[in-house]
Length: 521
Image 1: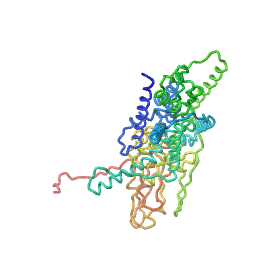
Image 2: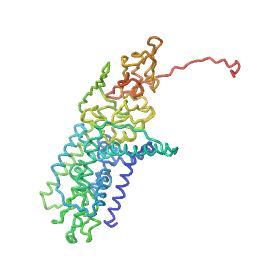
Image 3: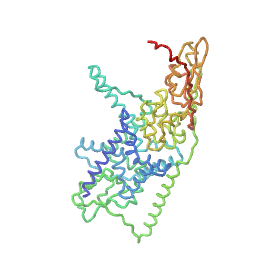
Image 4: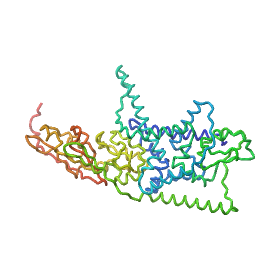
């Protein structure tokens, strides 16, 4: 295959991954199966690296494939698999359409900035404080942009069209319910989207080569790739076309050299070169240059140490900060811990592995999974939590555990999930309308799937809720169903570590039936 065709192959692969992930995050009705999810998420770098560190086995395949591809061809991940990279290419394409002549130029390497951000990201992984990874991971940023910014707009347009059609008695579209997150949680994805759009429109792939830690890490690894794109000096005619189309700004036309460390393998140079002056070349190591040998050895040692650290970072623990929530009601509600999703095992495990990509938020049918604000502390901002003011966890649903790409939410079977105790319900009698207004209610007991909330005799022939902790799984159905406003009479406080609840045995009611009697009608 001629090198000029590599760009066509790259575009097809990148659009395939981009559209597949876009469809995944925009799946309104949860039509796609979990197997579809795994096909396209296991190759995302940071989620696959986290899985590799915690579960060495088949789940490490994505991370290993990315590393091998980089060691063979350079940063092909950035140009073909990364959805945020493809989004930048789409902005660059739009820029060329708006401005007929769009030329790029050689850019500064910004080594200090990109290695500083890479160091912070690695330190974030080592210590378990995921906030830097959450901020900088390209896949997670793409997920938040789609889930929090694009998807609500699409749903709004769809619902507007559905409303108009229903008014005209055309029932072709059904409205889609959506729970909008806090405005403050939209600021960060909006900021990232604005930065990515601006840099892409103006400077091509500058975001990948100055901010993205994945790009910085793979740029180091690409120094040792078997093949590298380089300029064939004897064939180069000095036309400067390759430099003008290089989105990474890594081609030096004067010295006829390519900084392959910053090359994102977009292959634009192959398509415009009229003299076959740009080629893939085998990387040969000079044995005569001892200084170069020592330098290469030091770099290889750095890569080896980095990979070994990645393999053990998930075992490091960190102190869990407690969040106290006080509500201005008659009795202050103090939630010691937020509720993490079923399958997350513990708050510590969840915070240690979650990159806040929001795939679980987008896939949750009941929309009970919402981005957190400060419930997990500052270091866990935007990581999903169970928000029982918005909804409740469906008793028969395990979708979030099937789509998580980092194993922050481990796969669970439905039978196991139904006994997983995420938290415990707490009843505040002074807020209950049975106590305050002397009227019947029982909504919490009616909606409890495990019958952990029972109605017991109170006074004046009234009954009032009573919680049995050993049967409660913390699904939040009682809290969501409670009609008391603005503060609930029953709420779920999360378990730092998930437990197993007891299964309540249903009592059999023996009723004697007289089969000899006449049929009643």
